[in-house]
Image 1: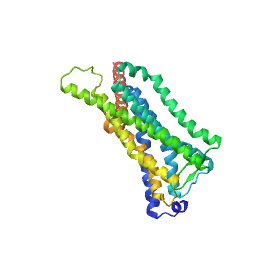
Image 2: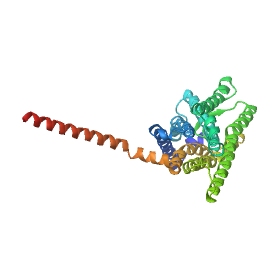
Image 3: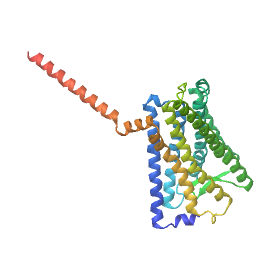
Image 4: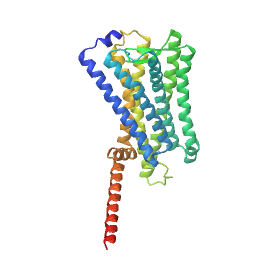
Length: 333
């Protein structure tokens, strides 16, 4: 597999790094815009968007620590960074693989409680402090699962040429089976199942709400048009997540439990690109589906604050010139 990576055709040697450079740039830009939008606009600082920000930060880490180094691998055809950086790269690779689905599942549950349950329940379960605690618990759990087996010597890290990244290597078949049983069930199937059930119940409640509105029945007014749009945008994120991650896990499990001849390098690299693509597209879904994010993105890209600041500076200069003129007139008089 390493020989295949280092002896690619010129076309592949140009195309593969180019695709990854584009995804890395888009991922960093889009997710940074998401974080900056919430920083600028206080109305976006909701409990739901806390999970959106957590997901964006994990995607920025993925782009900065995983995707960017993979670009160098695809350019050189080998791992050029040394063993220490390979270990760090493997940690962030695994962290990204595990933390994104769990954060997605928690976001879906947040929407379920917001739309289906009462406002009192939502306010009690998803306070600002508890929401931060949930995110911290997920990040610490994922970090612990990645680090503890490595420290205990149950797993190792190594460069996998087919994936073009450093990731986990299992010293025994038993550890491999145990590991994949845990991660597939806990960090993929459970979050995906939670998201699927949550959004099924959410859209069932929204449909009932719309039906009641058409029938002219009195509503509590808890499900607003804004909440429905936010829910739809997050549901699209989950759909895109499923389209990327289901093939990802199928390829990953096949590669781990079969020979390289069964899973060619191009298919293994597709597995890596699916992971990276999932991190890249989320901000564009927010911008396309969520009016609040779309407006804030547009404001940032148009540099409205920069124009406002320039106008204020120009105005202050004009006031200063007018004051100097009037002062001179008084002096002459």
